[in-house]
Image 1 (tube, rainbow, N blue to C red):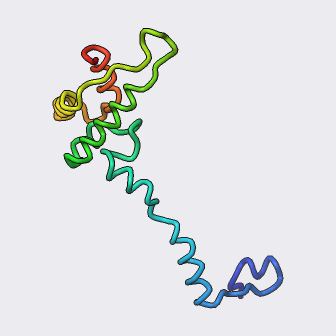
Image 2: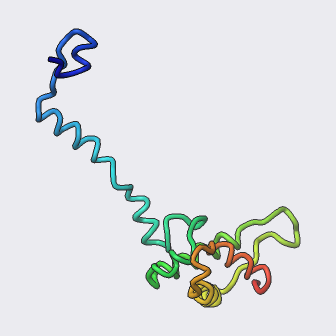
Length: 130
């Protein structure tokens, strides 16, 4: 009777790890699971894990503090250097109050749940920013 196909193929009995070694191996493997402190810190600062990926669904599920932090991140992003032109050195930005209202208005609509926050911000800033 064949109990273990690997034992049959190799012609020698397979070793079984002692339970303590198996538990230690599992604990070592699982210690790296569950995310990093970096992702938790990003959530504390802003709406989601990445300004590039944040959308209206993230905005709606965020706290007021996270939303304000995201508006500040968006302002720094949009207001960064845009080129070497002497006339336009930084991108247009919105006031934080205007940006918060704008994102709140758009993100309250069910159809906008997938809209990227940075796109809403930068498009609006291009028209009404200073």
